[in-house]
Image (cartoon, rainbow, N blue to C red; front, side, top):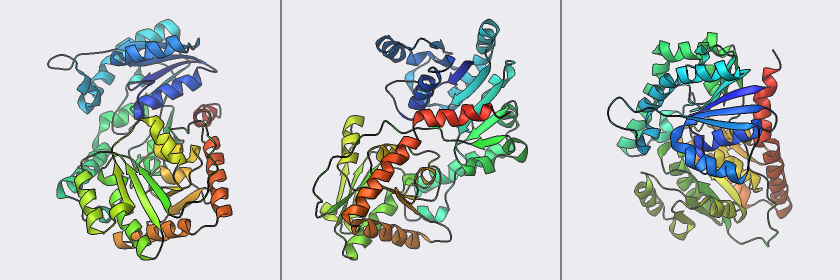
Length: 403
């Protein structure tokens, strides 16, 4: 097939949405002729990477536009208003590309949020969208105790999310898609029925190549790892009291957290109030290679995220054979099964009850026998293999063949 892949965010050296665009294009170009349509700001890094590792069936075209006022600058890549403006202005450019190349499929990939439209369905080619996220929510009770400013941000997020139901322009853009792919059932259910009936759940992110865990003697203290931004919905404020409760129950555990964000001082103060001392080690954000080594040096990954639509760190942990403890909210729960981790139920639980359930999972893992731990590590690596980038892309493009 000839595919036009719309990836506003597209980079070989950046993570998140940029990494999604890069990996999908790389995998698709193994079997199809792929033209990536992205913002011109990414050109230098993309061209350098493709010069080092050429992909004959991958072509990248660049488009930029100045904002309404002033000139383009790097911070605008994170601006929602500029992103929508870019998507609107790119349509004539994409229409000319289609006239020249006659694409079989136009695929809008990034940004992958249901709240922001792509109008590429207007250029006359078969149009698909996603996988999209953004419809995931968490009960407000799980944010209790956080700073008021941070809780208000969550309220604002919900307001923006529900504005989608009153936004005819974004819904109209999605209606042009032959198929919509969503990252979770939450997002699929959030769409109005006329859109949800052509929606299929498929994962957006894939696991890195699996690396075998080193064989080492069991240590006295069981180390749990958290990695992520220090913001409310990542749930570290729930992990800290869970660790404290596990210690109170007699488990010899510690938590290493890696990340930065506005809750840093709050979390340090919370750890002090809980008396965690050296059982909590908060580290600044580190290079990706160092984080991958840290997965290998830990005993389990504790990630009580409240509404991640994906969860890249969960797949990274699994790829290093690291069992995962997460919640039954959003994307992480889609990646973890009983063999490779624990999915803690939030249903009907208060924040205090959820903390106790997390503590029980922490204690249970600390007390697992060596054979049980090894079996979970093996299952984690096997799970990551089944969730590779190739498998994720295949799940979307295989569904297209089911017309």
